[in-house]
Length: 126
Image (cartoon, rainbow, N blue to C red; front, side, top):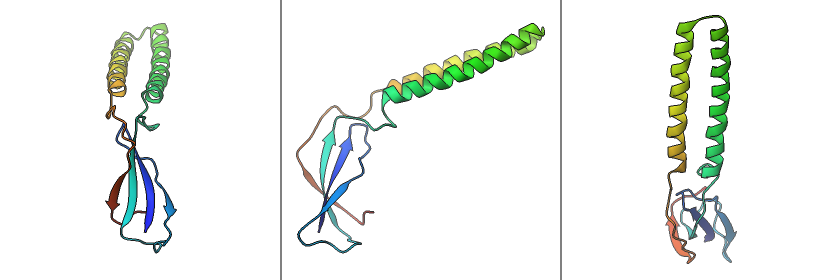
């Protein structure tokens, strides 16, 4: 039988398991694999709030710079309706950034760390 280790992160995702062959190795397509499950108080890169915060901020700054460049051009050419529309777009962009930051900074998962191994029976696993 194959034995492996599944590490569950506090965000709910799992690290890719690594397995070691037991004394009697299982056939390549074993139907029941035994995994030890561990919990780790950490998040994956997709759920890490610092990474996501920087991504949201970079996207906001890029869009904001584009809108401000368009607004300066519209003001120079005296297009008041375009300036008003771009002002609404800038306010909508600010609202998008605030909503995205609330979503990113919302705490996820649990703060418990359980290091005791638990045996988990899974079906076919690849």
